[in-house]
Length: 241
Image (cartoon, rainbow, N blue to C red; front, side):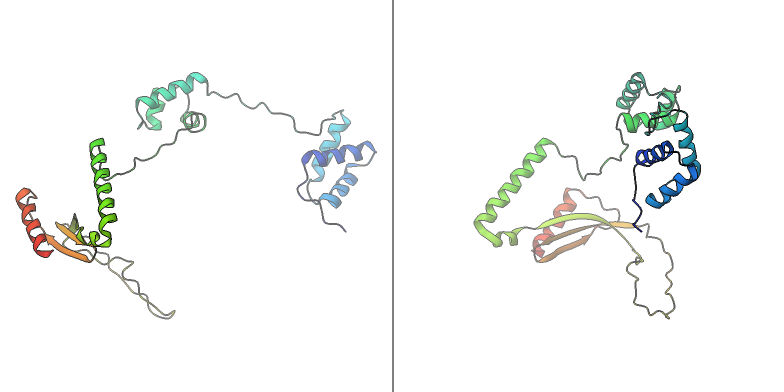
Protein backbone atom coordinates (compact mmCIF):
# COMPACT_ATOMS: atom_id res chain seq x y z
CA UNK A 1 0.00 0.00 0.00
CA UNK A 2 1.38 3.37 -1.03
CA UNK A 3 2.04 6.07 1.57
CA UNK A 4 -0.70 8.72 1.93
CA UNK A 5 -0.25 11.96 0.01
CA UNK A 6 0.92 14.60 2.46
CA UNK A 7 -0.54 18.12 2.75
CA UNK A 8 -2.88 18.14 -0.25
CA UNK A 9 -4.60 21.38 -1.23
CA UNK A 10 -8.17 21.81 0.00
CA UNK A 11 -9.39 22.37 -3.55
CA UNK A 12 -7.80 19.06 -4.62
CA UNK A 13 -9.71 17.04 -2.01
CA UNK A 14 -12.96 18.87 -2.78
CA UNK A 15 -12.50 18.16 -6.49
CA UNK A 16 -12.23 14.44 -5.68
CA UNK A 17 -15.45 14.67 -3.63
CA UNK A 18 -17.22 16.42 -6.50
CA UNK A 19 -16.01 13.82 -9.01
CA UNK A 20 -17.01 10.79 -6.92
CA UNK A 21 -20.32 12.44 -5.95
CA UNK A 22 -21.09 12.97 -9.66
CA UNK A 23 -20.47 9.24 -10.21
CA UNK A 24 -23.17 8.51 -7.64
CA UNK A 25 -21.08 7.27 -4.72
CA UNK A 26 -22.37 7.70 -1.18
CA UNK A 27 -20.62 10.17 1.20
CA UNK A 28 -19.46 7.30 3.43
CA UNK A 29 -17.80 5.55 0.48
CA UNK A 30 -16.24 8.85 -0.69
CA UNK A 31 -14.79 9.34 2.78
CA UNK A 32 -13.21 5.87 2.67
CA UNK A 33 -11.66 6.64 -0.72
CA UNK A 34 -10.19 9.92 0.57
CA UNK A 35 -8.77 8.28 3.71
CA UNK A 36 -7.15 5.52 1.62
CA UNK A 37 -5.29 8.05 -0.54
CA UNK A 38 -4.78 11.15 1.66
CA UNK A 39 -5.08 9.78 5.16
CA UNK A 40 -7.41 11.27 7.76
CA UNK A 41 -7.42 14.66 6.06
CA UNK A 42 -11.21 15.24 6.34
CA UNK A 43 -13.86 13.74 8.56
CA UNK A 44 -17.10 12.18 7.34
CA UNK A 45 -19.27 15.14 8.35
CA UNK A 46 -17.30 17.54 6.12
CA UNK A 47 -17.46 15.09 3.21
CA UNK A 48 -21.23 14.94 3.65
CA UNK A 49 -21.42 18.75 3.84
CA UNK A 50 -19.57 19.16 0.54
CA UNK A 51 -21.73 16.50 -1.09
CA UNK A 52 -24.78 18.54 -0.09
CA UNK A 53 -23.20 21.71 -1.57
CA UNK A 54 -22.56 19.98 -4.88
CA UNK A 55 -26.08 18.52 -4.87
CA UNK A 56 -27.43 22.07 -4.47
CA UNK A 57 -25.57 23.13 -7.61
CA UNK A 58 -22.27 24.48 -6.29
CA UNK A 59 -19.37 24.08 -8.73
CA UNK A 60 -16.62 26.12 -7.05
CA UNK A 61 -14.21 24.03 -4.95
CA UNK A 62 -12.30 27.05 -3.56
CA UNK A 63 -13.07 29.01 -0.40
CA UNK A 64 -15.27 32.02 -0.89
CA UNK A 65 -13.69 35.38 -0.17
CA UNK A 66 -14.66 36.81 3.20
CA UNK A 67 -15.20 40.51 3.46
CA UNK A 68 -14.84 40.58 7.25
CA UNK A 69 -15.55 43.51 9.49
CA UNK A 70 -14.70 46.87 7.91
CA UNK A 71 -11.64 48.53 9.40
CA UNK A 72 -12.18 51.62 11.55
CA UNK A 73 -8.62 52.82 10.88
CA UNK A 74 -9.18 55.60 8.40
CA UNK A 75 -6.70 57.95 6.78
CA UNK A 76 -7.93 60.74 9.05
CA UNK A 77 -7.24 58.61 12.14
CA UNK A 78 -3.75 57.79 10.90
CA UNK A 79 -3.04 61.45 10.29
CA UNK A 80 -4.22 62.48 13.77
CA UNK A 81 -2.21 59.67 15.35
CA UNK A 82 0.97 60.62 13.53
CA UNK A 83 0.55 64.30 14.38
CA UNK A 84 0.21 63.41 18.07
CA UNK A 85 3.34 61.25 17.94
CA UNK A 86 5.33 63.97 16.18
CA UNK A 87 4.28 66.46 18.86
CA UNK A 88 5.43 64.14 21.68
CA UNK A 89 7.58 61.12 20.92
CA UNK A 90 7.29 59.91 24.54
CA UNK A 91 3.51 59.78 24.41
CA UNK A 92 2.05 56.75 26.17
CA UNK A 93 -0.79 54.74 24.69
CA UNK A 94 -3.14 55.85 27.47
CA UNK A 95 -2.27 59.48 26.81
CA UNK A 96 -2.84 58.98 23.08
CA UNK A 97 -6.23 57.47 23.89
CA UNK A 98 -7.10 60.64 25.83
CA UNK A 99 -6.30 62.68 22.72
CA UNK A 100 -8.26 60.34 20.42
CA UNK A 101 -10.97 58.85 22.68
CA UNK A 102 -13.40 57.82 19.93
CA UNK A 103 -11.48 54.62 19.14
CA UNK A 104 -10.22 51.86 21.42
CA UNK A 105 -6.64 51.50 22.65
CA UNK A 106 -6.36 48.27 20.65
CA UNK A 107 -7.21 50.14 17.46
CA UNK A 108 -4.73 52.89 18.30
CA UNK A 109 -2.01 50.32 18.93
CA UNK A 110 -2.74 48.67 15.58
CA UNK A 111 -2.66 52.05 13.84
CA UNK A 112 0.68 52.89 15.44
CA UNK A 113 2.49 49.59 14.95
CA UNK A 114 0.89 47.94 11.92
CA UNK A 115 -0.31 50.83 9.77
CA UNK A 116 2.28 53.51 10.61
CA UNK A 117 5.14 51.16 11.52
CA UNK A 118 6.16 52.83 14.80
CA UNK A 119 8.03 51.04 17.60
CA UNK A 120 8.74 52.46 21.05
CA UNK A 121 12.41 52.10 21.88
CA UNK A 122 14.61 53.33 24.72
CA UNK A 123 17.23 55.99 24.04
CA UNK A 124 20.77 54.65 23.66
CA UNK A 125 23.25 55.75 26.29
CA UNK A 126 26.36 57.49 24.94
CA UNK A 127 29.35 58.56 27.10
CA UNK A 128 29.37 62.13 25.86
CA UNK A 129 27.67 64.31 23.30
CA UNK A 130 30.48 65.45 21.03
CA UNK A 131 30.30 68.71 19.11
CA UNK A 132 31.76 69.15 15.65
CA UNK A 133 34.78 70.87 17.23
CA UNK A 134 35.36 67.89 19.53
CA UNK A 135 35.13 65.48 16.61
CA UNK A 136 37.64 67.48 14.57
CA UNK A 137 40.10 67.57 17.48
CA UNK A 138 39.80 63.82 18.04
CA UNK A 139 40.31 63.20 14.35
CA UNK A 140 43.44 65.40 14.44
CA UNK A 141 44.85 63.55 17.47
CA UNK A 142 44.20 60.18 15.82
CA UNK A 143 45.96 61.22 12.61
CA UNK A 144 48.86 62.58 14.66
CA UNK A 145 49.20 59.28 16.54
CA UNK A 146 49.12 57.27 13.32
CA UNK A 147 51.77 59.48 11.75
CA UNK A 148 54.10 59.21 14.77
CA UNK A 149 53.56 55.44 14.97
CA UNK A 150 54.47 55.11 11.30
CA UNK A 151 57.70 57.02 11.97
CA UNK A 152 58.78 55.54 15.34
CA UNK A 153 57.11 52.13 15.34
CA UNK A 154 56.42 50.29 18.63
CA UNK A 155 58.75 52.62 20.56
CA UNK A 156 56.10 55.32 20.20
CA UNK A 157 53.59 53.11 22.05
CA UNK A 158 55.87 53.14 25.13
CA UNK A 159 55.33 56.91 25.39
CA UNK A 160 51.53 56.73 25.62
CA UNK A 161 49.99 57.03 29.12
CA UNK A 162 46.23 56.74 29.60
CA UNK A 163 44.23 57.83 32.64
CA UNK A 164 40.68 57.60 33.92
CA UNK A 165 38.60 58.08 37.06
CA UNK A 166 35.95 55.84 38.57
CA UNK A 167 33.90 55.53 41.75
CA UNK A 168 34.77 52.55 43.95
CA UNK A 169 32.93 51.31 47.04
CA UNK A 170 34.60 50.87 50.42
CA UNK A 171 33.51 47.24 50.34
CA UNK A 172 32.36 45.21 47.34
CA UNK A 173 31.09 41.81 48.37
CA UNK A 174 31.93 38.64 46.47
CA UNK A 175 29.54 37.99 43.63
CA UNK A 176 27.65 34.75 43.18
CA UNK A 177 29.72 33.99 40.08
CA UNK A 178 32.95 34.43 42.05
CA UNK A 179 31.77 31.98 44.75
CA UNK A 180 31.47 29.05 42.33
CA UNK A 181 33.19 25.84 43.49
CA UNK A 182 33.65 22.32 42.17
CA UNK A 183 31.27 19.94 43.91
CA UNK A 184 30.65 16.24 43.70
CA UNK A 185 27.11 14.96 43.19
CA UNK A 186 26.96 13.92 46.86
CA UNK A 187 28.57 17.11 48.21
CA UNK A 188 26.37 19.42 50.29
CA UNK A 189 25.33 22.64 48.61
CA UNK A 190 27.34 25.70 49.63
CA UNK A 191 25.47 28.62 51.16
CA UNK A 192 26.12 32.28 50.53
CA UNK A 193 24.55 35.02 52.59
CA UNK A 194 23.22 37.99 50.71
CA UNK A 195 25.05 41.23 51.52
CA UNK A 196 24.57 44.78 50.38
CA UNK A 197 27.09 46.94 48.60
CA UNK A 198 28.75 49.53 50.81
CA UNK A 199 27.02 52.90 50.76
CA UNK A 200 30.28 54.87 51.12
CA UNK A 201 32.43 55.25 48.04
CA UNK A 202 35.45 57.27 46.93
CA UNK A 203 36.85 58.24 43.58
CA UNK A 204 39.96 56.51 42.25
CA UNK A 205 42.31 57.83 39.57
CA UNK A 206 44.24 55.23 37.61
CA UNK A 207 46.95 55.71 34.98
CA UNK A 208 48.58 53.02 32.86
CA UNK A 209 50.79 52.44 29.86
CA UNK A 210 51.30 49.39 27.65
CA UNK A 211 53.34 47.68 30.40
CA UNK A 212 50.67 47.96 33.12
CA UNK A 213 49.46 50.20 35.95
CA UNK A 214 51.58 53.28 36.70
CA UNK A 215 49.57 54.99 39.41
CA UNK A 216 46.43 54.19 41.42
CA UNK A 217 45.39 57.05 43.66
CA UNK A 218 42.34 57.22 45.93
CA UNK A 219 40.98 60.69 46.64
CA UNK A 220 40.24 61.32 50.34
CA UNK A 221 36.52 61.68 51.13
CA UNK A 222 35.33 65.24 50.70
CA UNK A 223 38.16 66.19 48.33
CA UNK A 224 37.17 68.51 45.51
CA UNK A 225 38.79 67.61 42.21
CA UNK A 226 39.98 71.03 41.11
CA UNK A 227 43.09 72.29 39.32
CA UNK A 228 45.28 72.08 42.42
CA UNK A 229 44.23 68.52 43.24
CA UNK A 230 44.74 67.33 39.68
CA UNK A 231 48.14 69.01 39.42
CA UNK A 232 49.20 67.13 42.54
CA UNK A 233 48.03 63.89 40.94
CA UNK A 234 50.03 64.66 37.79
CA UNK A 235 53.15 65.25 39.90
CA UNK A 236 52.73 61.81 41.44
CA UNK A 237 52.23 60.39 37.96
CA UNK A 238 55.45 62.01 36.73
CA UNK A 239 57.38 60.40 39.55
CA UNK A 240 55.77 57.03 38.77
CA UNK A 241 56.75 57.31 35.10
